Image (cartoon, rainbow, N blue to C red; front, side, top):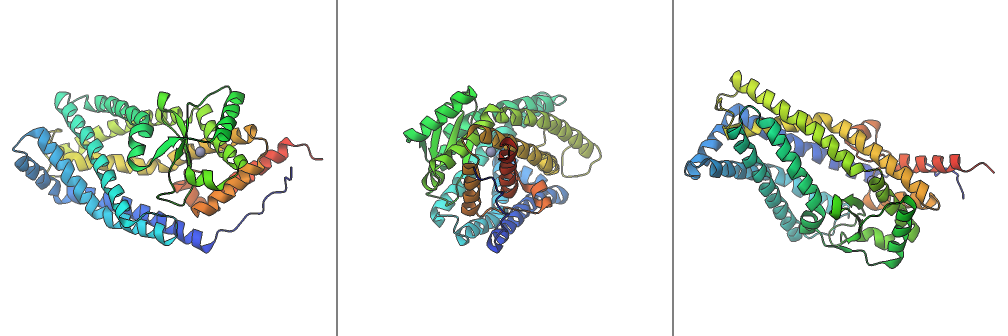
Length: 385
Ligand SMILES: [Zn+2]
């Protein structure tokens, strides 16, 4: 095999601009959310929102909690909606989206309703637990959160994902055969490979490993299946199989378990400190006053933001492991390299983001690094001839 390193390709101005806009949009969205939480707390408007909720809910506590979550979520959507619409326009402008405005709005509505339903269930549970066990609520809430989280990970591929995308078992004997062979060599078996009908919405290509237990599966976007050779698709399949074999979903879940335990402990500490020192006069000192919800979300948001580089570093490590697994299990890394090159072009990815951008924002190593690592691996394995 030819192992001359692929020369680094400079990113086009278009790719740089597109990725810069996307990062700014992400940060603006996070800032808007952060600002809303701070404003609600500092102005005391969260207290007024709570009073309206009681009034509209006929003084019934759990109905009032729901109405509070509903109003909060409407305000949040009103603020972030324009940014999301701009994000949609950007995808259209860079010819990465096929979606008509109506279909996009329909997806937005479904996403908002799903978020509201999940958020409302969880917030109701938190305040029910606070009322029952005001001292140890944070530990119980953490256990309940983990239970719900596992349920969502399991149901995601069969219930949540199909709300937005059509997905069906892969109808391609040659590819199924290749996956079976890959799995046999690894002594493992993935229950299913599914075709993800991404092309009706997007021109980008993607693949993923999803689910736990019986819902574990590999999904391949039809945009990938249409434009890549059998060898290239096998390289992508081998990468996803690598995530499965190296138990990356389990490892990510265990990381979440540890971080959320710390998170709930921290929320309890901050709540008690802030209420004890009367930081926000509109909040009742009793913990079950749901007007303190913005403070709970604020602590969780700040913690999530601070941990982002660490979480992304863990994810990049998983990606490197899955890549190594792929190179070891495909006939030649050339197909991996061309698949990566095609993916970068098709998705308008930055091949060489700045070091800061990669460290802070990226869940995958840059395409340039992945290609260079694959070629270095192939050179080291083959004695020079
Ligand atoms: Zn991966």
